[in-house]
Image 1 (cartoon, rainbow, N blue to C red):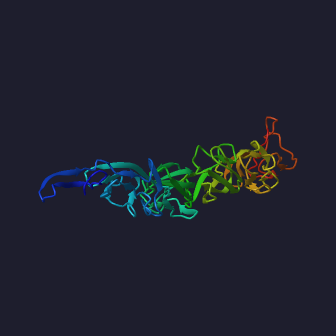
Image 2 (tube, rainbow, N blue to C red; image 1 turned 180 degrees about the vertical axis):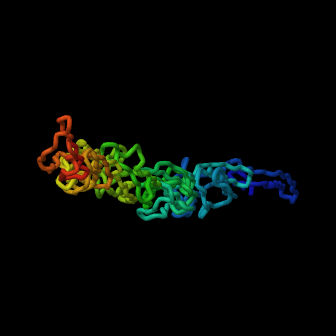
Length: 450
């Protein structure tokens, strides 16, 4: 052309050559270059002003960008030669499009850079915050209640392995899985393996967290029942023989000699006795209890409060070994009868007796009415015996002294004449030999005087 006024020079280097002519084909040239440089930065627009909040995708711990929601746009006076991103923070990486890019949970800074090829780049940035709003899923091993019996000889139940442990899953990660116990057993922790449960009902509550303060609970009860009966020990194997106390018809238990003992895996809530037979009654201690003469059955019962009772029994035999006390009639005289014998009098009715227990029977030997030969001032021993119902006796001797109160009958010689002798005196004749006598007893002596 003939003029460069208004001519548009493209970006880059352009050589301008001028030629002049005088009409006689004489031309001269001059030339130079025009270098057009782009000094205008591209304009970039980020799709998010400062931060984009997103929730994790279902069952995942990440968020996947949807379409171009996080892609920037850029314009330039010439041309945008590149538009790229870089990720820093909880997610890292780089590229040209965020469509379908997976963002990890947390905060990720997105930085977009645009260039027009002249090394002029501009940046815009924002953050993408991915939050976990999905609660963990927890599974309790028991639906409502687990019934367990106390362990042998214990009042507790020890959890076996993982039988009471819950399990939990989360779209990200379960950061804690803990339990708390309330009711008969209290406590907390992370595993119930080997935990000791007290008798009764314990509520187990499991809590799971994913670290975003989102916790879920499941709960059940563990009911521990005592099915072990108490163990009772009677102090007597089968029978205890005792004698009545002095002057009494009974025996008073000394100390704890007849008291049973009992143990239980939990606790003995009651230990009671009942008496049947010659003694009756009930209570909790036989100390000082009075046992009547005869046989009494003692039955002990123990309970642990779960209506589980056990019995042991034995007998107490109280025997009367105390003799009655006899007061017999006094020693006395008895008269010899016509055949020189005595009739044994009734010494029973006049005798008395006392006993610690029963009515006493009094007897005598020889029996009343028995005839027994005797001599004057001779003695006869009569045994008077008191016997109680247990066969215990007290014997005393009553001495009878025989007395002959019957006069003999004399038949003397007849009256007779006697001759005076030379001195006009008479000699008394022997009248004894010619006299006779009879008596209830033998041994009569006849004498005469003068």
